[in-house]
Length: 153
Image (tube, rainbow, N blue to C red; front, top):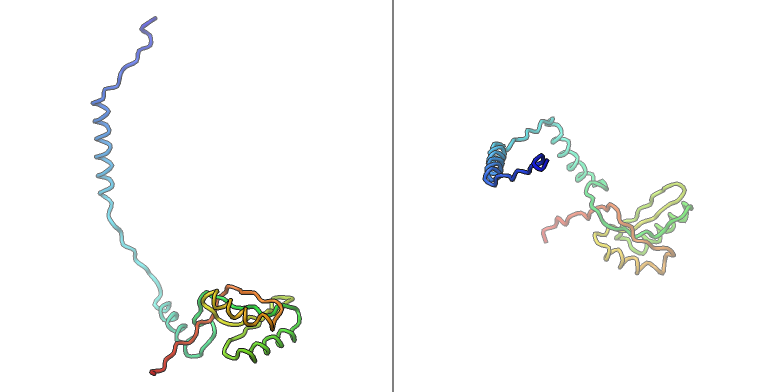
């Protein structure tokens, strides 16, 4: 009964041979892979439409033709349409160079001013108009980029 269970020691040379064979085999499989090519099949009208969209936006001066992420200062929030228009008129009177935007999300009107690339620029305007308006917020959203200066001065 003593010899019924026997443990055989593994041959270290055999283990090394197996590991060497596995590494050699796996490297040849990895080397057999080649770089593929991607062929994009699309209608040529897509490029035409993209070019036309940007040229139409540039010609007509549509807002949204050239947009980016930025900040606006919200100067009014309320349910009165007339109060929203009054706030917009007051802002346009004090700062005629800034664009103002009115949006309506039922049941409230929002009046936002400016197209600022950085929060710091929006913060400067917010501090200037704080005495004129009761609730001022800086809102991150898509802004209209300023038109490039094409003068040759």
